[in-house]
Image 1: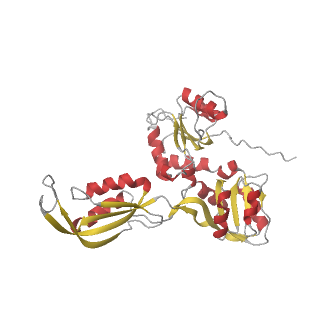
Image 2: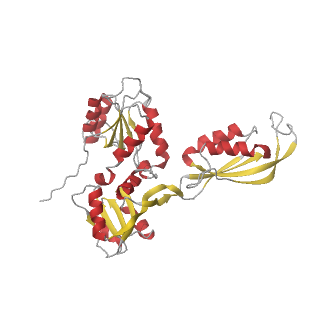
Length: 373
């Protein structure tokens, strides 16, 4: 049962999720984030689900929790009214009437290591995993100029704010010596030199990569640590791939499998009654590309990466031809591919809030049924 003690706000809960999957990592078409409700309201408990349907809202109400964290946004496209004419509007009305806060963590959770795709890989026992198609729009290059004596303090402040991370390395930067020059106005209050007089100073040029979503935090740290009244800096978008953020995942089976054994493994790991696949090629399977949800757009990336198989959901008839006799496309149900996301959300929040009511929804929201005959 939910705790009787006052809990954190819904915003506090969500901040921990956004540390795992920042909203800046979602795709441009997505609608992750708060859907309805007051983020500052006291949270009485969290219910984790794939879909915030009306039945899930009713489950939350019955269990006394007022925050539903769903993978899929129940409100995906713009709506001009809430009249209860469809399942989404019915769920939204139910949530609003009962002051249930709805939050979606969708493609931002798809795009991070440790997210949806990593859970699929874990279920399959893959090792040596990495992002299949890294994002290239998430990094800026920060260049600034610092008096020699302040190089270390400024670097430390930038690193503490999240700058300077490249893949598995942190505190990455470059600095080179030079001479800075300036003339302050009569109203200036320069740290070195005098107002109205030209001045030169031995300085260090510092360069670090900054994740786009941490830009404000890093710039605040720069201004707080830098001794100058006016801080000179450049923030430049770069096309570098973000090695830990992007679409899909690539990994390796510890031991190669025959193609039919691969299909059986997928069936067992995901609890499937059936699955679809492109023609078998008579080759061993070891390099695996995958993408939770509708990932057929990554077939080309999987081929280019040398994958033996590509596992995803919702592959259409013509998209199976994209295998090009180079790999085996394996298609399963959308819900089935993302089913472990509920466990992911639950475990993350429970670890962050061990004494708080975090629940897994028992409502199965999969809208697809199978008739086996």
